[in-house]
Length: 500
Image (cartoon, rainbow, N blue to C red; front, side, top):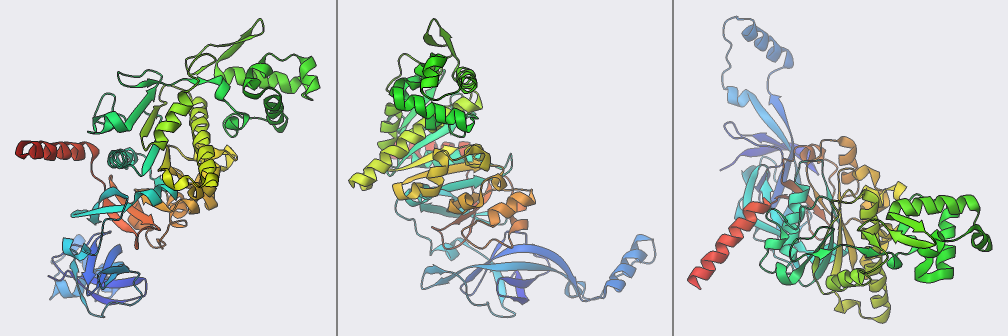
């Protein structure tokens, strides 16, 4: 049944007259011939002059005789503006390069309209096709191996479902051997310590490792031995002057893995030999003691906290990296530590992963390894201009060459440099009311979303647009509610077990 008719427009923006009695909403998908269009804007239309409309309104409001129109459904109507989203030709998706028929009737899309979609190899499930507020039973997958190495970005304001999306993605990645994940979890919400989470996946025992400063049964203690620390791990995390940064490298070149202890116990005579001024040394000692919870007594460095230690946990970083290289999903609970310690730990482990994968490429062994994804929340902390050139910056720029990518979650896309935004080749765009943020996202999307600003602003919780170099068009989706998805999968497993 037709819902509207094409009455004008141009390439990229088609005008549709809505049929009376029907309702079109922003984001709706409509089909005509071999083209699927998406509604971007709505406005009123009328055959009456504006003066006549206002006069009739005034008479009715002020209590005059009731006004009525003959054939009102013909004279007054709703215009919809739509863009051709995709053209299906010979069962394949194509970028639309033609206008659909003038006066052509449009219908709501059905599940059959998406028969051209195929599940790619190394698939990663994201959600189901969404037409406006309606959800079709059409699952959307992308090539997870490629998408992860080319970086995924999840931009949205608070409360639009970013964490739920990551939970859904993580759940479907757990059994996949093509990818290992490092998940930095500052809110302790992905493992599911006290609620449903990754721990409840049927393969979690073999495929998920959980590290915390206060681990439950089955988890691991999160502690970093100071000997693992390198000067470049502090880049962008600890605020250092150029002289202080140079001093770190001087002590590292002289003392190797014991550089931190040597610096903290150094006297001015030794510092002078290294060309380090007294003010620089004193400032560095204060910053390092504060950052790592250290004290120095009688020439001995002592760890006062339970995160950075100078005894034990020497193999922890190696254990984590080895697990990720086996395709495991490693979750780090950083909820109980300050931001600088969280980012230090994330940087130390990420740096080791990136170094290993560079070595594998040089040795010709990269194809044998799974792709690695680094999930980082509040991404501007490590990708913004103020963060400096750290390992996350390096990965954002060149990680795809080494099959290491970021899953960057953020509320403030505008704080990430444009060239890094452009390198995020898959964007799962959730709702955002702030125009400056929408502009940053739209300006770096894989498809032309220049007319989608209102569409993005209108996205409700769990609704998203997937813009990716691995999709032919920007796909509107509805993301499953994680708890419902797990419950449904458990129900299906029970049925299979019953009929087994």
